[in-house]
Amino acid sequence: MKSKVADFIAKHQLLSRDGLHIVALSGGADSVALLLILKQLGYRIEAAHCNFHLRGEESQRDEEFVKSLCKDQNVPLHLIHFDTAEYAALHQVSIEMAARDFRYGYFRQLCQDIGASAVCVAHHRDDAVETLLMNLIRGAGIHGLTGIRPRNGQVVRPLLCLSRQEIEDYLRHIGQHYVVDSTNLVDDVVRNKIRLRVLPLLREINPNVAENIDKTANYLQQAEKIFNTSLRSQLDSLVERREGSDAQAVSVKSLQEQPSPEAFLHEWMSPYGFNSAQTEQIFAHLNGESGREFTSASHTLLIDRSQLILEPLKAPMKTMKIPEEGHYRYTEDMRFSFEHSDTISISNSALCATIDLANIQYPLTIRPVQTGDRFCPFGMEGHRLVSDFLTDQKLSLLEKRRQLVVTDAKGDILWLVGLRTDNRYRVKNTTSSILRITVAKTL
Image (cartoon, rainbow, N blue to C red):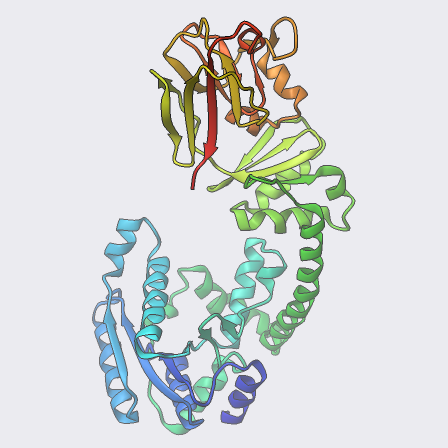
């Protein structure tokens, strides 16, 4: 048993001989075996126990058992108590998620406080198999079918090479007691149903089912490495990152030429909060009507003509009155300057508009484009719909929504910000004073 774990630790380079390691000790069979094996292998360890106060007297029983075990083994113990139910209610998360947040947040802090290099948790092969089956049921992609990794940052899992039965046999052989969490014996949640009902049935079909599923997960881990390398190459070549913007774009034509466009779409979008059902919908509408949008909690994706455009959700653009010349902060990262001058000079910058001051009436207004807006584009005769002008400029629907205009008191558009001034307010030979409007991004 010790040799098997030692070989696994060495293979995956999980622990260092001169480092300090924390063992997450619940008192159950898995964590007790982890503590004893690492101690026998000569690693420098300290234990940490979290009391979540979720199981009444059992929670206190577990704490007392852990105290006694660490005292007998001469292993330093760190204890912490959490009001998990109150936290879950306050933050509107599940009890399981609240306990996870508490546990790993505490472990990270404890590592810093005592100078530990890793947190050892007692997940074993059966846990990895259960996780794979849970993800398979949920419809996970390749990343969800690779089991539990031996390392995830500071968290390491030295017992992934062992089955639950091997662990229990080891403890029975050395005469070591452990506590049993009664909630694990009730098939009321998905993991327990898989553990107590599904896996026993699968073992009737093939007694080696857990070992074979674990092998499959290992094969998929290797396949995932090839997949990730190919995906990174595709992302680099297909995803256009707009200069001066946090938007990304992908050509629909280029996407459809990929060996697996749907898989690419899922991998591109899942980090931005889009689930598999949404990516399936997006894929189904690639050649559909332009202007269709899909939204996650943090991002929006637009099918815009021949492109997919992805960008973070942004607050709606506001309307701001400008009573007089001066400097105005429009948003946290954008400010406008309105300056009068008798020195006639025309700016060539897209971020600066030079307007004939004659006949301009304050207050001016900065606002987003509205339906039906019309103006006379500089250098052109007659009025045009702003929406038509923006279409000619090949702006996406998302960019059109964020397009700002500056109007005067009469409601006339003076400047389509960053694009074109109004021809009626252009600087002429007879101009005696100008209004210079400058927009700047701020940090």
